[in-house]
Image 1: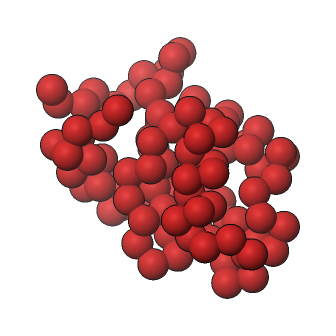
Image 2: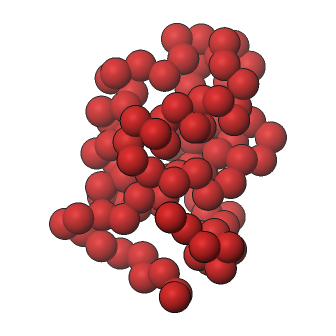
Length: 97
């Protein structure tokens, strides 16, 4: 569980990132979840975009992905959301307590 201080730190880091995944008209698929899982393990913090053709609202798509990947939704702005999950093998981000 992230504290507000952790979220602020992660939001600052995410501001420099570009979205690397898109959720389209197919919604959240098993293949997409597998790729997101691998990417979260490698990077810990990722930004995703939800296209207008996606059947689910942005908040619902972000929550669905986060729950299935055991990740935290850092923020949702417009059609973009940011996910964080601490890496087991490749820890890069040190969160303040």
